[in-house]
Length: 342
Image 1: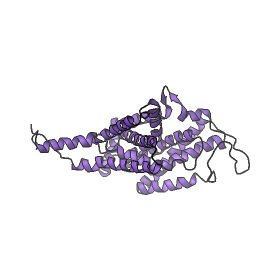
Image 2 (image 1 turned 180 degrees about the vertical axis):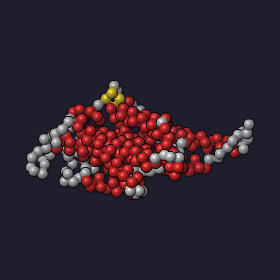
Image 3 (image 1 turned 90 degrees about the horizontal axis):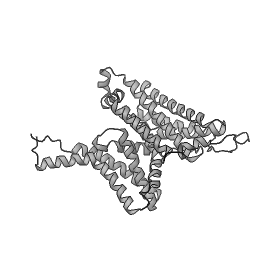
Image 4 (image 1 turned 45 degrees about the vertical axis):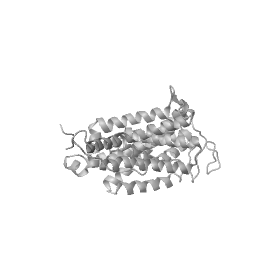
């Protein structure tokens, strides 16, 4: 027990404050720095563009967050997003179907991949990293087979020599280009999904059980929890969220780009890891994932406006992740646990 006002007590309070609020302070500090040195940075247009850019990463990061909560990790989210791009493009361009049909097909595709991951992990008992890594490679190759490795675009020549009959519908393109008042639709989707994820994980029995499984699956099993079912649901949710991110992505680029989603995995995992350090929680959480996506968006937007090359931006993203891990693990473990005397 430490006496209030002593040096050890002050050190303990300081370290607690650093762990709890340090990452938020870093985010605010970087925003203020870029706003002060780049006059255009703090404009409404740039802010909304930054949020819109971060939406896909944040949504995929939410999927990763759900799997981290149950003690796993989904490495297939980037491939699922890329598969969603191909499925949407093929539905509208190859088969000349509506944008609504494309949305349904993509969501079903994400759920199916989630179920396959759950089957491999829960039923076949393959470690989650290996199962989702294998699924990632399967999807990366399988999505190219129907299109012979080509990007899908309106008017492209099909293998039989005819032109593709369909195109991306105007309604579908509004997923990325539309606005709800002044707010871009992708930002609205992102915020709605963050709120829903926060509520499910933090305010429901389902979420509390998932955290319990992640902390100690054996104890949860002994308490009568159907651990396999909860773990399976996390991967299904992850697949569905990855497909939503893919819908925004394909609406943005307007074609079935074969390379779409290639870099999304690392960014999604990064923002989920960053999220564990927010408010010193030391665990995956929805608001932390959102803040991680915003922080990376701030860094990349600022560096882009400064004219830095892409490889400098990749280095910056890596440094952000390392900083988050420092707050989340190293400092939180070294901080002084104190009980002021009464």
